[in-house]
Image (cartoon, rainbow, N blue to C red; front, side, top):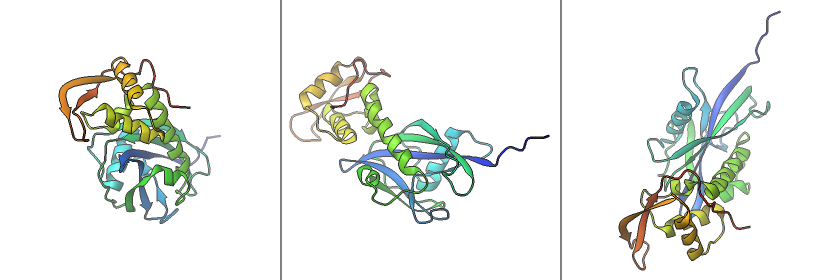
Length: 230
């Protein structure tokens, strides 16, 4: 007796985060077709037969939003396979987390009716229910970003190539949603081995006295970690 495999598909969904107007924002697209026509959703779509997951993630991001070839950090988040997550058929989605500094306004592609940045706090609070299980995926992506700021240099992904400690502190405060003591933060990030690499340049772009510019160092893990306030 031959085995007939169940009909299923593989998709990718992207949690794209950036900082805009001192808020942590997520990239959303308005669905142009069924199911959930007109509902906001994370960018994504089905994986083509001849492409791998990373290629599919990059293609979907470019097709639905025109955001491509930008300095973003991209990593797999996790997989989602509830049998009822998509009313059309069994769809297993591999979600990606993408982070970038002050990413530009998106332009909706052929697969989306609109595309926009939305404050994460508003979306997670339920302002405009997302399609599919994308609210769960978004919450997982935001928590991944917040936790990785504790033990990796991922916070620099939200910064320009050269940044001040004050600008980096604003990233942590915005992503974590808590104020941080400037002197204590400066001591911790400059004391973490390989986290920051000082340059010989300074800037006054934020006003006040000249501040030293830094680049991301070579460390992959922060030692000691920079823990979130309780």
